[in-house]
Length: 326
Image (cartoon, rainbow, N blue to C red; front, side, top):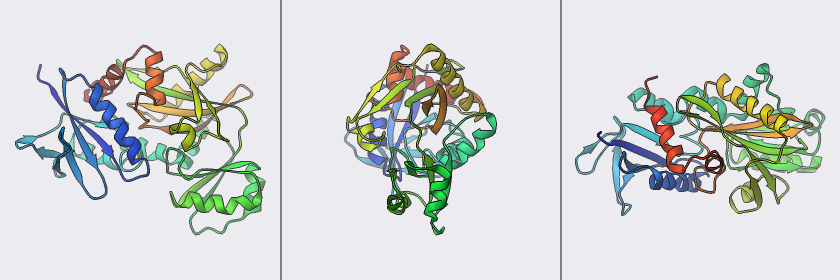
């Protein structure tokens, strides 16, 4: 059987650039070289290039997403390892759909919807998916601190609406901290969401399509050494990530059912990772990531390993699903 050419796209336009590079490198290392010829493709604001083993750069022809190496190489499938824009917000998804090139992540509408925390939670609310009380602020709006506090209470979380890896997030304890936190969030996005504090157990739930069926992976309990699961806790070892989570069987089944419902209601494909806070035995959804981290230390690969899947099997399953006729 002829080997498939797989472009692993990495980089992107956001502060998650370095994390994306690490994810892409791990995918490159673990794809079965007897089945796939993998190529690293770096996408930034200034260039789209294919990298060889010495990191020499070869420009991508954006008209058909091909590259001269020195003969023309086209790709059977694109593996999306870009966290943030333009890989996680639907921009590249729409581009590849127009070109007819299969992509491992979800559709462009689903990507754009899940990338906006505000839109995601609003769409899921009629389906019985619970979330924190929230207040929306756009850049240029008059900031009414008392109205915010009356709606969500204190403490609360101020978040950039469309940003990952906890960039732009603050936990606010008093009225005086609100405006500085809002200004910090506006550095990441011109839309923010302010949410009530949920005092409970945080869990992360991976959901994938595997062998043609939706599969919920063993969930991970997040125990942060910091005040919340911030950037340091996620990437600098300031947290415990316990897989499987230390919760009862009844709660586990309830959260698994909720995570699968989110995946199916949104008509997701590929990988997803949903974040919940468990309060009084009820799961409250925080967000859904459709291009989660893929390093060996990342949560989704940890969960796959607990489920008996190697990194190679996890990544290959995504390619197999992407290559199926839609």
